[in-house]
Image (cartoon, rainbow, N blue to C red):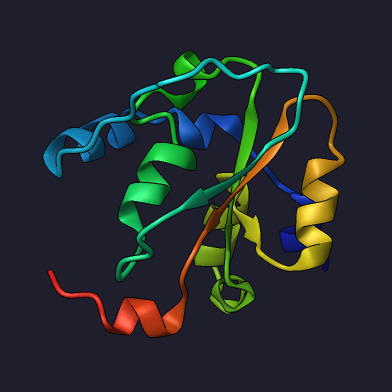
Length: 135
């Protein structure tokens, strides 16, 4: 099915689980806003560095663990990842439930056309950069 490209099966409750607040405090990570965003516009964001697993991108932009929806009300953000991540059973369904989608061009176009405030986050880099990452 085309759920990873069209944003199917999104469940906002998964983003708001208390686990994510604990997760963000454990590592620790925080999200700050330097500028307000117009919720009637669509945005393409880039996240860098890629890192090994991109846990910072996951917690800050695919969950409400650091308060994204409070800092940027009306901005409906989808974190995008490699299509191969959607081939793993159960993991695929959890990603889709959190609103994480494929990073293909088709997915970008469909996500940005969801309406006002529809935005995407692309983790810049890739496999080569993640291999060169040093803790």
